Image (cartoon, rainbow, N blue to C red):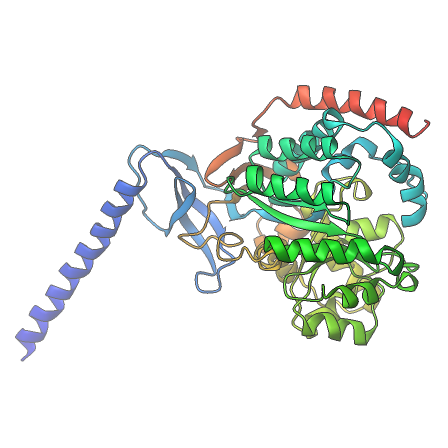
Length: 456
């Protein structure tokens, strides 16, 4: 009997070794021409089943994460040294206006409505064109990519169709994964242009999605209703700013959304600060999602969103950078602000969100908000290869104490060494891919034109 058990055990060992080797051969064949990040000191997968791993490889095959594990092989693959590096999913920026790099630093002494009056609304009557939009969008896209933002939800406003085309071209050229929020309304020409953009630009691009934007209010109800109807027709979600300023509740934003039938799963609300308990209950009941923009809310003195109360209602909440009122594309700084605001308000260090929570909000949580969590947001084999590589051997990051916490509290954009979107390296060895000098020069020329539009 003992002899039979010994033979069986030996057979199991041989079979196990064969299966491991077979798996490696599969990876060899699939990984040809891909990228292998070898011996990463830490891999923060954001996958509940995989967890956080040490001394682990990540294999990218084409646009996909092929494998996460030790001892992976990939013949012909580019090899990136992962020693002293942290690998994690790319950031998801749920709410921004990329063109607003052209008004960085504008009206820093104003709250939301004063800032809009001085820096944005005058441009609706200006000759803003595709060159302006492209310059601002291109600069912001390269900037956000360099900091580890791999997916962005960009809302370029509604200056004119030509402006929107320039902004959209900047997004396509960036090779960033993106959601394009096109401002809708009751004008049939705008609706027809949105249909064309979806058919000709968004649908053929695997990196692109569409949302319809509107500004809900009693006085803007017809545009709100038309935008919601178009969103339903096209099978996309509506994207709105909701109760950002303390003056917003009086404009009937929630009532306009109710009347238009827009309170439905997938609706994305930005800011969502000045909410009653009943209103939060209503949003939660309809699976409405929230883009939390802590740095922007601080800059404009807008208030502190009730993120812990949203959590208790099981609402889907992620983070946004919000363009020109953030003045930075730094998601690390945004995460710190999300933690710090709630702690300062409650005087409770355990208050939601914790550092672990904001890491999820900035990655998988943001993907869930957009309904893209089956594709991105975690380093799960089979998902799209959107990820970043952080160098831990820097004066602002070392020494090693609690690396996941240090990602939130210590990391700066300069620590991001590699950024991959859809398997393509858009930042390599600390340098963004693309002509950054040209992007800066073009943005300066556009900003100079914008100053004249603003009467400065």
